[in-house]
Length: 356
Image (cartoon, rainbow, N blue to C red; front, side, top):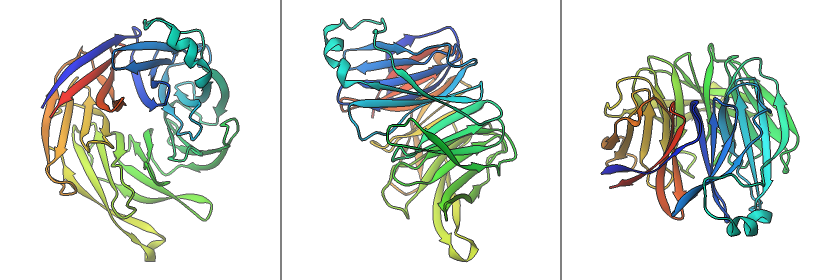
């Protein structure tokens, strides 16, 4: 397998922190968060990439650290959450269907269009930097985490205009770096500077920690669930300061111990990275796992047989943002073609092809 650069997009001189991708009937939207406080929206097309929007850079007073598209049954509207080092979360929306005709008439250039997303809400509550935001699979819950050691869960309405905090989770002992929801159920994973991952579920109208995953020997920067509809077949990939990529597997729920879950470390993937690994993404389409980190390497792993727990490295690309660290990797599906997107300290977003 080989990894080749399809497109490099220089967006700013500051760090690219976060990416999130959403396919719609009208556009393939990649949201980009960066240190310059300006959220960029790219339209990724097979024949080129267009900068659709640059959102109001005065909304946040510090760097935007995380962006996440809301899963939405209304195909004509998109909603985006953005978490900032200024301790707030902004919510943006746009009726994309109304702009389709005018966008199709415009040339495919790298200039932003006139129809920007509208600011819908500002969410306050965290005492310190917001490190990550993530929507539940039905789009009705938003999880946020912070340097203040807490995870907050917010409930919203169908329009995404009102947000009520329904739970504050404070069991991590250090900075919480990342949160991610399971793609088909309301199970939340949080990753922390305390070297652990915690799993959270709702019981009796409150959210409780049902498992603590220990084994990493450094900050856990990120995790991602395997796509599965089977509630008994749940796996999670995680990456850490210790340069390891681990696969965790759910075993059972202990009914005699207040519904606590039993998880095991099923695998430690073959070593590729030699420094901190910042990001992991588990493809819902191919089942491949992608990782990136401070060594600038983009790595791809394949399970030899689904569910076996035996993995092999099938491709790696060193210095994929030159000498700069790579903070984020995401799988994107552009009109049926699976690609990878990365963001680095060089302020660029790179789109990658790969061949098995």
